[in-house]
Image (cartoon, rainbow, N blue to C red; front, side, top):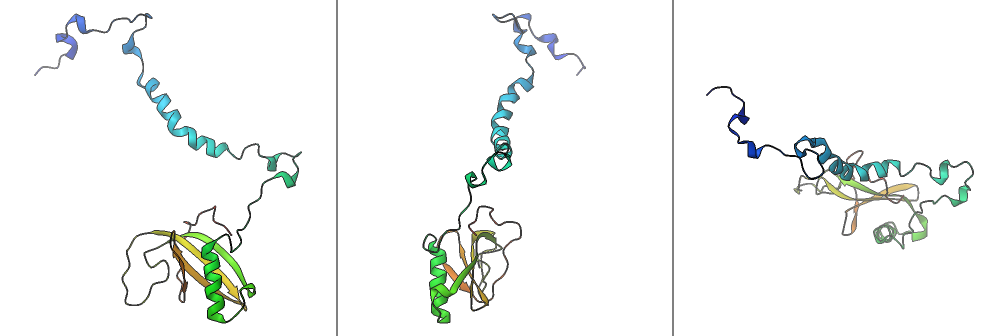
Amino acid sequence: MRNEPRTEHVPKVMTPTPNSTGTDKSKIRPAAYLLPVLALMLGPMLGSLLAGCGSEATDPGANVSDVPTSTTPTPAEDPKVAAAIADLAKRQGVKTDEITVVSNDKVTWRDGSLGCPEPGKMYTMVLTDGVRVVLEAAGKTYEYHGGESGPVAFCENPQQPVPGKASSDAPQ
């Protein structure tokens, strides 16, 4: 084969012609097609990045009491915490009002043991989203672990969740 231009054998009828507006469609650059697609893809990201800009907290004239605050759910509002408190009260023989919630976090466990492996058992080796409830009674802390759904269970020898994988919107 020879190195010849490919358009040598193309009939003249197939060459681009000006459209009704007088512009040549063959001269539209591919970037013109990508711009709307990129805007759709990047729009939500930019919106979330700019969401905090200009909030009341940065406005020097804003009243601090007008800024929304996050609230910690009471045990009655979080059934997993309520179940953990009831279980610990029964285990330790203390009243529920003598138990304080140290933390209630959404975490990612290293495997299906949910951070509480039992000797001799095998678990799925996959990162698993779940929760960790830490309670305190009589100066000692106790951990309850669970999956995203389902109950929490007392963990006698707790392991740490995957670092940096905790959800930022977890109730504290």
